[in-house]
Length: 158
Image (cartoon, rainbow, N blue to C red):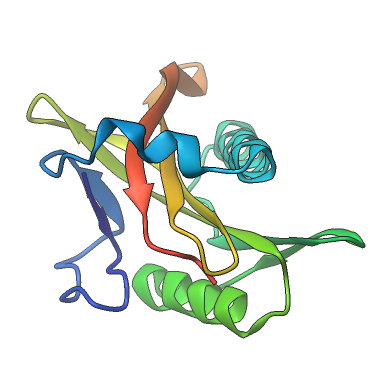
């Protein structure tokens, strides 16, 4: 699956950070993910979904940087694509062992586009993982839709 806003070697996204299905990866890529990356991806995705459901509005992009001293969260304001790129740059410039970059975008599954929070996580210098969780607006407020989605492998975050 293709992730936007773009990774450094991709062309800019046309409008809004999103995920769309069409890229397929080897089945064994998951074995290369450390348990710590899996945990950080789950933590960041859960936090992102909590923010969107609680606030009922788009979430500011954020990073979670992790090293032996713990985790540090930073949020990035501004135009969505620029804010996500600043979050990516912040992660790359850090000395963290692993990082997650989270943003509010959408996920296209079966030709249907739905709002989603998206998280790209990796260990330093290692390929990572992209996960997402869909949500929707209802009369009662914002609610999570379905289960988390394993989008696929991602480039190193840092």
